[in-house]
Image (cartoon, rainbow, N blue to C red; front, top):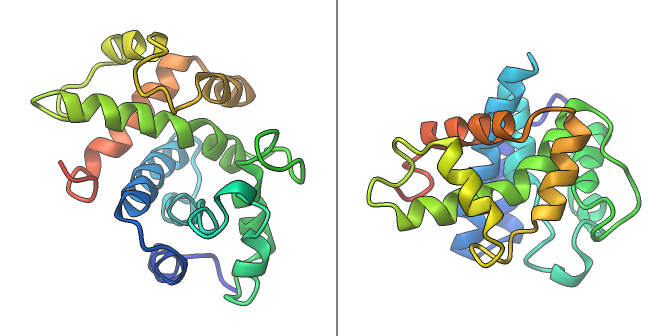
Amino acid sequence: MARLTLEQAKEILAKHTTEEHLFTHAAAVSAAMERMAEHFCGDAAHWAAIGWLHDVDYEKYPDEHCRHVREMLVPEGVDEADIRAIISHGYGITTEEYEPESDTERSLFAVDELTGIIHAYARMRPEGLDGMEVKSLKKKFKDKRFAAGCSREIITRGIEKLGMEPGEVMRLTIEGMQRHQGELGF
């Protein structure tokens, strides 16, 4: 099969997901992945598609997340490398199948939870994502009570896997999300 497209990712996710917040999260991760791809000189549209589809099995199998990705995506003709990238974002959390190795995989691992913190912070700001600065986001990141469901430990592990400064990954993720504010409800 040809590389996964965002249009295909949206069609596939819609077959397995009904909860609106999961589509918003898909859009946020897709936006962040698009920006990370640009940073790594990758295929931004392809990375965005992987980001959109990364939680394809979450609604149906929340306690077995990432363990049903293959059975859902093989019949759709999704490439094995893309399936691997999606499964790898659960490494050490819900599965031990694939450790994130490529820039795509490590980026997905890092930005997945980070988008949740950024989204929560934007929701409490009158200006939403506009003008959000890394410095202020870092303060929210340090407050464990803020967006408590977003694991700082997983985000930190992901950023370490990328070998980047936390502020740089935060900046890129904010920029990606800012570009897609409409899809994110801002």
